[in-house]
Length: 538
Image (cartoon, rainbow, N blue to C red; front, side, top):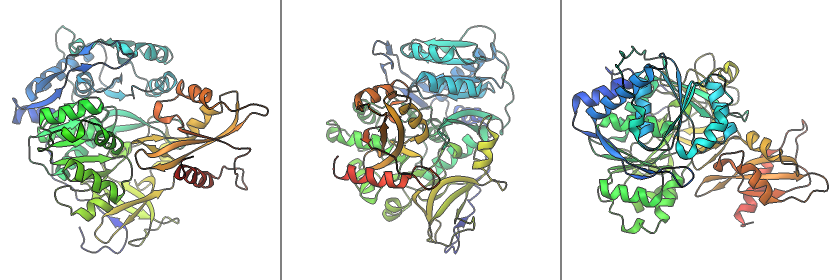
């Protein structure tokens, strides 16, 4: 990397040449190098859903056992579907999610992991757009999945899992696993776009392999160790950076749902060397009464991302956990990571004020409004390019063309500033996307639901800065003439139709929405109003 850049443009290091080119190769490598290494642990716990689900068995897998069981899952899938079939999951963190991730990859099929908190309409959209043939769901969520799965025409089966991962393995002769090409699709993950409808991001095998390898190298820990990962496995942060990153290290990957007491217990019991958690989750852990008494003496790194951190927040997290922080900037389109600080190599000021430099295989530009590369120290839109990145959105060429230009640059919509050493600071964003607790919320999607209530005539949704959640979803509403606005009723209406993190936290009744001359809502003014109200506790 150049010692002193003059323009905000940087070609990422190519990284080492890898023998592994597809997801299955990384699992085979771990089984070859350390067949007896424990690479997956799932603590026993109560299953998700309606509160009556049976207790999960949990368990641990060596690398050889994980390869054998994932191969059996692949064989079971291949008895029913040809390679290339899309297999959807509606699962919270657990052994089934990991085994299906690897089993689908070994079978040459495409995983479609859907947020298990998604509502029926959201799940139906994901199933329909991806044309998934099969859906795996836990018993406690079968009702939601059943209502959604009845709509897509190509869905052949809904498989209900009762808490025993062995249900994924069906008997019979094992078919030969197919060859898998590095540039073939591995997953379709859904992310909200500015249009308000979630888009299916195509993630290929090579992207998952290269990203997870580069991420693990930037973390800088020696092989082995214990990675505690409560990040959701339907996200790239959970199943690329977590599942795949830990496998490169041949670390014990401890997978569990985020429940503060359970995470703290697992960290102490397994002697965690790395914790992966969004900033909101870190706050919840630090606020938990068990935190002060939790033995964290083996912790070496805390990894986080999903929202901008202030220097004070970095200081607090590092002091409380007793370990340096690795902060990443990434998107689903970048397999979860594009920029990252090196926790063991970067000094404190870099960790406090930047999101580091590009990981291997990532080119970066910061451009001004005219599309020209900005000078060092000047804010502009962050553009990314590299073989790791998505090739585009599933069945959406228009959205793909808007996001990825003719030269292959992904336009992130985020504002960034690059310094002379190539380190970047995120300075805001061009898009109106709200980022709350590490999740993306498209205002238009929420507005459509809010205005679907009979008492609401118009609505505009914005984000307001919040130290814990990154941003809170705030709604400004114009009631129907003669109607009294009932916040509880509209909130209940939203909860039936939106994931919980998308439901507005604050409601403000207005007589009219501020508009531009072209009749567009002036979101900047609403954000200002919301911030002032939030600051004064209203």
